[in-house]
Length: 114
Length: 113
Image (cartoon, rainbow over all chains, first blue to last red; front, side, top):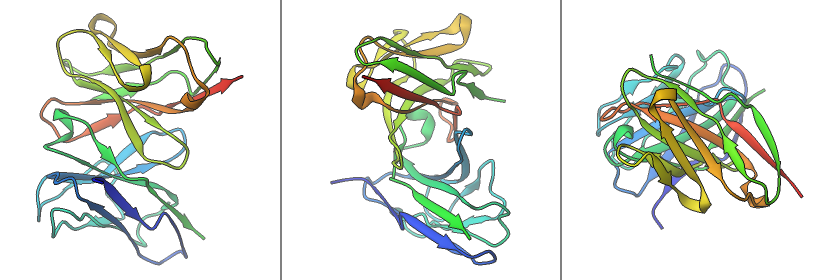
């Protein structure tokens, strides 16, 4: 079945550690996105990528980094510079930009900083 | 700047009753409009979308939404709610041809027996 796979589903980290969240899609979509979800705030865009080897900052990119070396993969690294990293992270993809159709979401990764 | 407002943080309805979730947006022209649903601990699933044309759009699971340009609204409706509809609902807008989707804060729906 086609879809988006995020891993791990739950992750705990100590302060000062970098962590990488995985996102893989087999939908053959060009665009991929990372959103952060906090209670009562909806989803906020961290980074997005329209094509391989290209990505742009979203509204809350500080303290995060991404790469897009393959069309199928768009990993997100939460660095120690992110001041409040505890959140639910959602990866999404779309065929050719969010404005032309729907976003397809993974099941999310919950990061807790201890 | 684009923005989306969902005035109701949470709503409780009885099973079998009708439902309307409100959404207002701020945008210079007519954006693309979406409603998504999220079950606890899961990703989001598209319920319906509006790009242009007929202002009443039908979606999955018996949901519909009506675009009202004069009110900058895109309210979601369902004539008869089922217990399985309990979830969080997000209204979203995007610029036609763009790559950014702006989400509202969400409305959590509780269904009572």
